[in-house]
Length: 110
Length: 113
Image (cartoon, rainbow over all chains, first blue to last red; front, side, top):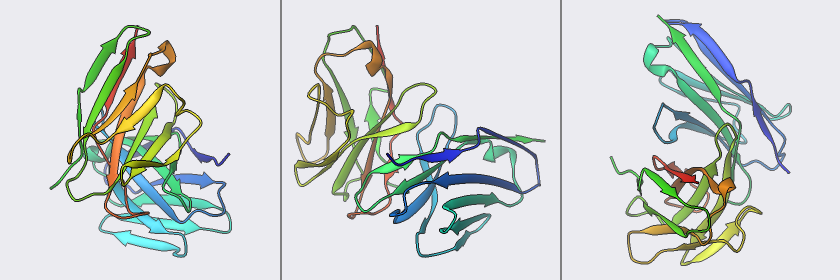
């Protein structure tokens, strides 16, 4: 079946940029998403990118997509302590099913 | 801002019992989903639902599971005879269009003892 992989953990200092990486295997992905999960909360949709784009910027968030390598990244500029959370990458194929990565826990140190 | 809500936030049940997890999707959305996340594992798709029928389901969604939209606002997931391995966080999601962004609720933590 399709697979989405992420590194488990990232630690950065407040004010630095964070880059969270994701790889996927489904060559028929149509959209790729980034969700944020804070402790005890649900999955908050942060941003998404259509598969025929290679970059999308949304305020402090920049999504880069390398479709050839099936690699997606999320860059958070000027990372704040409030950005500490688990970040999930997900891909959607031609249907409506999302396939999630295991999540990357971002820790922001003051 | 409209949001998906789920009740209860935590449900404890004994093995073999039936449980119903409830969701209220965003009001003008037409596509509904259930996902689950077993502790320490990935979020997994269970089922999608549109126009009062299942449109897609995963291998996990066997005969023990069913979904229903009993009225104009609720969307439910029923597990007929719970097993220990059904213990997980269950997330409901909805989207306004086919293939549109899916907005998730806060989840129901189901504990089967």
